[in-house]
Image (tube, rainbow, N blue to C red; front, side, top):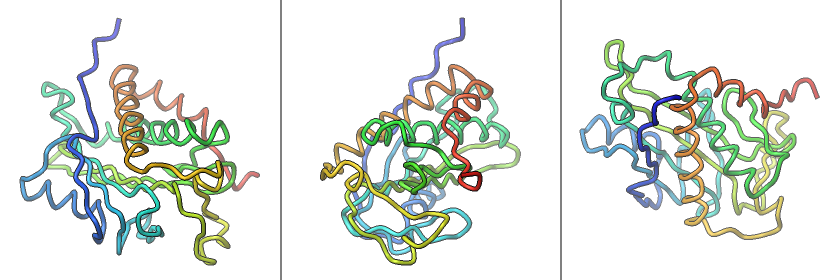
Length: 221
């Protein structure tokens, strides 16, 4: 029997922000200033320079979507283990699985994962993940998990809509419902917490196998 996984709770405390450049930038600054509390979530109504993969800007209307960053100190997971950058592979997969489970819980089984870490509904982008890590020497010490999820936004810029690589969609467009963002943030925190617990319990190989069940290859459609 596998040993019990450490008790991990993401989303506590929840720090509410109004307008900010990027929750990831803010969260990383808190870590470097020594002000960070592991498990914290920084949620913003609006980002002026939201960060996406490969330096892209994340588009989101004010107060309509989930824009947040969670921080986690790896030592809190297991203070006897020396966490290294190689451990980030399974962790990243776990976060993608957690974000997918959150959205699928409301949108349904058409929710998929486009590698490395985008959340799609059918062939349209519903969310994105940007994980940034702090490594000291050879040791992985902190991680910042940035997540943007399209929840209540009902329209997107023509550039985004016409983009083959994204063509965004929101949960509101899928379900024709308006969702309570604070409740949705709590659901996301729970889904990510469960995913990390599963990764710690099952290990990297099993987590990567689970990931493959939900991967979508848009170029092959």
